[in-house]
Every structure is written in C-alpha cells, then in structure tokens.
Image: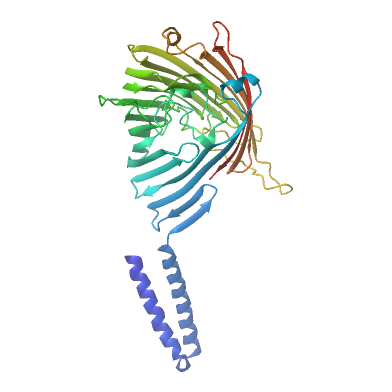
Length: 442
C-alpha cells in the first residue's frame, strides 16, 4: 500500500511540474533547469516503483521460474527427458525379452513452487510408458529446516532410491533398490537438526509394495505402515575436515499387507531375475536398510544393504514369512576434477561446441550389486526353476556431463545368476549388455 501511495504522489508531482514547464517562458533559465532535473528524478522513481510491483521472470539452467514481487510466491517449471538404448551381447537374453531397443525411460515435466512462506508443492507426472502420477505432494514448513510432507512422494527407505533419477551413475539403480517402493502415499515428517548434521524422516503410509509407485496392497483391514530413517553427517559443520562429506544411517519400515504381492525383481539391464505375479501377501512386512556415503573432492562412494521380510503364499495355501536381501556399493570419480556429490553435479568447464572451448565433466563409475532370495520360496513353489535364486551384477560406466542440462551415459553391465536355467543345478547364462542414455534436464 505504501508503494502505491508513493507512486501516486510521484505521478501527481510529475503532472504538476509538467504543467509548470508548459509556462516555462516566464521562468528564469536556472529555475527551468532545476525543474527539469526534478521531473527526470521523479520519472526514474516512478519506473523503479513500477518495477518493484512486477513479478520477476527468470529463465536459467535450473528451469523457468516466476517470483511474486515480495518473493513469497514462486512457481517453477522443470523437466527431465531420458532416451535409453540397450544392447544385449548374449543371444540367450533374447529368450527372456532381451532385445536391442531404444526406450524413452523418463519423460517427466515438473511444476513446483511456494505458496506463501510456509507451503511448498510439487507435481510430477510420468509420460513415458504408462502415464501416471509420480510426485504429488505439499510441504508445510513449521520451523527452520523442518516440514511435513503430505501426498505421494518417495518414502524414507532406500538410500539410492532417494537419489534423483537425473543424478544416477548408471541407467538403472542397483539390485538392492528392488526391495523398496518407488513412492509412498501418506504423510511424513522431515527435519534437520544438530547444526544440520542429523536428518530425521518419519512417516505413516498406506504401505506400498516393493518396486511400486505408491500402489498399496489391497488391504481390507485399514492398517497402515510406518517408515523412518535417521542419518548422521558428523563432520558436516567442519568444511576443512577430510570427512566432511561422510554420512551414515539406518532406515526401516513396518506394516501389515494383504492382497496381491506382484513379486518381481529385475537386474540393471531390465530383465527379470525372478517373477510371479500370482503371489499373495497376508501379514506383517518390514524392511531394514543401513547405508553410508562419502564424497570428497572428485571421489564418491555409496553403499547400502536392504532386507525385506514378507508373509507370502499362493492361492489355497497359508502365509509364510520369507526373507530376501540385497546390497549395492558404487564408486565414482571425476576425471576433470569436479566436486562429487549425492545430488546434481554441474561441469566446471561446460562444452561450448567444437572449436569453442570447454570439455564438460567426465566421470568414471563402478558398481557391484546383488540380491539373494529366500530358498524356501522355491521349496514352497512360489518360484520355480526358471527363476534365479541369486544374482550378482557389476557395471563399469563413463559419464559425460556435456553441460549442466545435457548428460551422456555409457556403461557395460554383466549379471551372473545362481540357478534359473529351468534345469535343476544349472545356472542361467550370464547376461552382458551395453547401456547408453542421452539425458536432458532443466
């Protein structure tokens, strides 16, 4: 209101001065010059006040953004597009659907922003494959570094799962992530405290199945699941410490599920390790997920272990508890010296075009990952001889961050199996594949 009053007064002053200038012939030269200076100064003041009352439009590498004049309301448009190519080097993979192909792996526009100082929001649909909603949530900020998130979003379990899809070292996450839900529907608290060295996530959810995007089991008893994680970065407050980028913690979930379990586990090249969509679930389910990471200069390390316990059965049978586990350890190193990190990494010398300078950022990546299934799943007939009892995969990758918006991934993945050939005592053939990705993010 004060700005509007000042603006009105200044405009009125300009009008008065302009009227005076219209009778300028009766004024002395020095008086006329002074009045003209006042008009110019008032005109500049009016322009300044008008600009202060206009929204701020920003277009940058991080997306398109509009801010209200007071900075309280913000709307931002982002996007992620990933074009993948998979080439399978062993002929046996063709019998399991391993055909060379292009795929739009992710096509995700995002609208996010801030509605006042205490409310944020995000909406992200997935437009590739089956069109669906991934993220649809609001954040209520009730204190510094603390908020309550409500809606469909990533839950607390899965260290690599929580890493954004645009920030992955390889085309796909490790095998351990197969035991975590992609999204959870519910409400969760997130808070950083102790000089931001401790992070707590705690939530109540419908209870999503392993690998699902927030789809719960078809529970008829109204039970919910609880999930939480607690991570420490003990040296974060000391930027000079060589362990400044070290963090570790534990995540877990517990709930009761009832209905179709949609049992499916896939290797990093997107072929099934084990699958039976007729498996049912009835009883308690829980996950344990310790993890750690370390980033120092160009070096990065991420490691986690996940154990998934579920009560499964086939129609006509009775629920039995089965325990499956997976693990992942991944290393990365920037040959061009950029600081490594869990989130987005921008090249210090982006590629400008042939002959124009800039080489982007080059990153080497290496990963070991595996899963082990409960042998009783096979003894009880929930899985058969065509399903593997265990899988081990290693990947070697070279990533080129061309600019902060354009990224090229190239990797070799090799997965070895225990059993799974369809014949007792014989292992399924090793899968070898070359995976590549061209990614645009803004």
